[in-house]
Image (cartoon, rainbow, N blue to C red; front, side, top):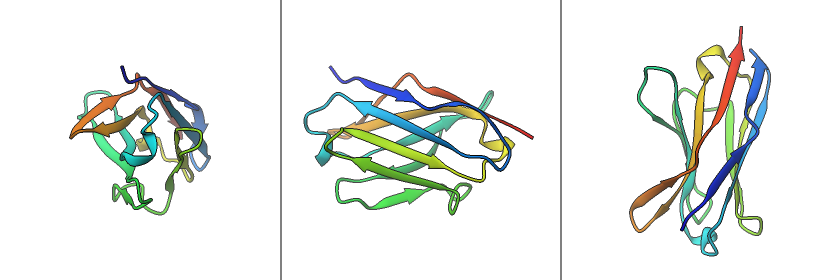
Amino acid sequence: QVQLVESGGGLAQAGGSLRLSCVVSRTDFAVNAVGWYRQAPGMLRELVADINSGGSTNYAESVKGRFTISRDNAKKTVYLQMNSLKPEDTAEYYCYIRLWGTNYWGKGTLVTVSS
C-alpha cells in the first residue's frame, strides 16, 4: 500500500510564499518520479511540477520562476516551494509518486491565495 501525506497548505496573501511537503511511504522512493498537481474548483487537475530520480525537474509555464520542486530521498519527502503567489494559484494541491507507469496520489492540501 502506498501512502502520501501532504502538508503546508493554507491561506496566503498575493505575493506571499508557502512550502508544501509530501511524505511518501515507499522504501523505493528515491528511484521513482514524484511531483505535484493542482485542481481549482471547476477545473481539470493540472501538472504543477515533477522531479525524477536523477533530480531533473519540469514545471508548468504558469509557475516557472516562482515555484521550486525538490526532494529529500533520506526523508522520502517531496517539497514545493511557492513564491510570489497569485490568486490564480488557489487550488487543492496533490502530490504523487509514479510506480510502474501509474500515479499514486495523496489526499491533497488546500492553498488559498487572497488578493
